Length: 508
Image (cartoon, rainbow, N blue to C red; front, side, top):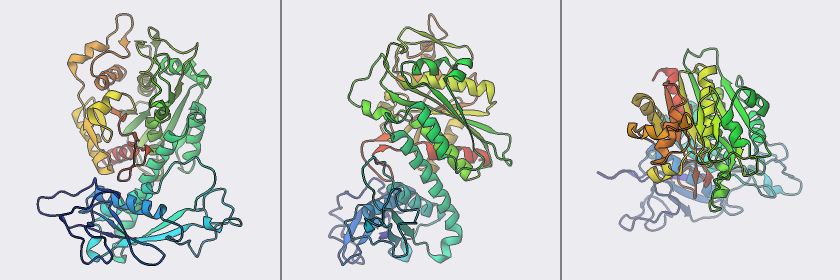
């Protein structure tokens, strides 16, 4: 597999949206230097051309003008073409014994299926001028390769692993290798977030999520894990979590992850991720259409788990605590009801008006706990919170609300560096009185703009402290693949959280 860059034309932006199925531009001829390129083919980002010849197969992938998005798209498209290639097009690794190689899928029986040996392919530039301009470009390419290879599957049988060798010219390796290693760790964070969010909810109870998260981070030395049960939640006054989880036979949990390396400064970041392992809507029940996607309603919590693991494995010198309030919002005689008044951690009371607005109920408890027990310098919550945010921003951009414009901009900049787009949203002062309740301290789901109303509700629990609220209802799941993004849970926000915390450790 080789890649080819397309020289950017004057006044022409790079083409990050082009993918393997993109139509060729009829006005641009194929580069005559590319042997076997189909007529009209151009090296737009992610465009793949199969080249004629005997096995093993040969492909060419476009890298566009070499922007970071182009490199991610190229890497993902390349590995997907290799992964989906017919038998014989990608050869088994002749130096690997599938009986002992860890890259072979678990459960492989090499004695009965020699085709399960890992397959191997090389990815290299087509010409010297096609190499990325800097280490960040190589990192984006590597991230695309890792995430393009990721699929969440629950199927019978095994499939052979694919090992891709990224051919970095010797003169670039000293600078490139650390950037690629970090990119692989970030890509793994996104993939871990996808796996947790996409796991079917019949398996994924709150207790399962907490225990599985603990297993996933076991390879992150120095990362502390504490799992609190429903008895502890009751003793500590987590009324929102208990109310939401009260309708399920599978009780709620609070997962706490702590990264506090010896070289950390005084700054303490607390990340709070919504962990609703399945959301029926409760008594305010959702329609059937789309309810299956509610297995991914824990995407915020999954992103926090994945980010903490990556921060620890990267030995990032900043203190970070992750909190994931876990509950299943179900329908039963013990479910909480519209009209109930719930007392949260810290004593604030909420008038329930819509049981399908459960995410803010569990986040409120966790934010209050963070402020009164953990002494954070900033709290960042992340959640698939409101359908309104999908209407406002679409399904590829996250919304960010913040107590301070500079803090909000820092998150947006971190997302841009991580390849995850965010858009700043307002905390409209004229809408704040709508959160007031006539019978409780606050009203859970006032009318008006849903995303802003939810953020204003959560702000009531922050005590005026530095705080960011990330609504990822749109980009947390995808109906189809594009660039490095997979169909299903996307793992969105994990890389942004890592980058945001890392920048605070460096003072940038």
